[in-house]
Length: 249
Image (cartoon, rainbow, N blue to C red; front, side, top):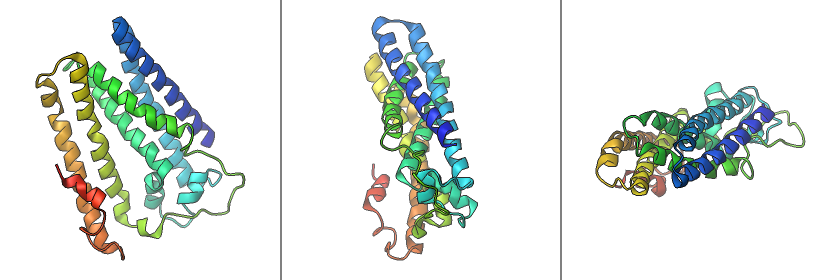
């Protein structure tokens, strides 16, 4: 699965770079077909990142300790929910999870073209630029499919503090919220790039903004409750000032 996951990530990066070039060239040269092909490419990127994510989850579930990430964040005695949560339990896996959510949002936005034909191509271009960072890092320094020179009998497992039922839902809620705000940002940038600086983009992103804020709120409530369970975290307000700031406008 490591080879399959690597190929999926590399293919996603290649398609992503094509989309970036096609978006820029299409807008500058006024070639609608290039822009349309780039929009289709954004859907392909989501499918490729989904394939890579499925490969990593499968490797975690089947204890493929040849993969460095699997050996570092899972073990044979971990229950299935924690094995699945190990997808976002470490930096490289969480980066893949972040890219998957961003790709999912871009995939959904791509179907809004009939409602906002002037904005959506620019929106997808901005989201494409965001994806470039994550795919580039995963294809190089933060590859979640990097292999070990040897195969250990067992993995290290998740940090004991993270082996809590809240781990299965709290981080995804925060990711859905944080990444969700990339969509209103992309609409804002699209309004500037397209010259449509009226209130169209604000109306288009109202639901996105409320939904993202909802996910952040649920995530913070779950995290606050979790902070009272783990010794040493000191309760909600002494827990994590950075994440507490999610509630601030």
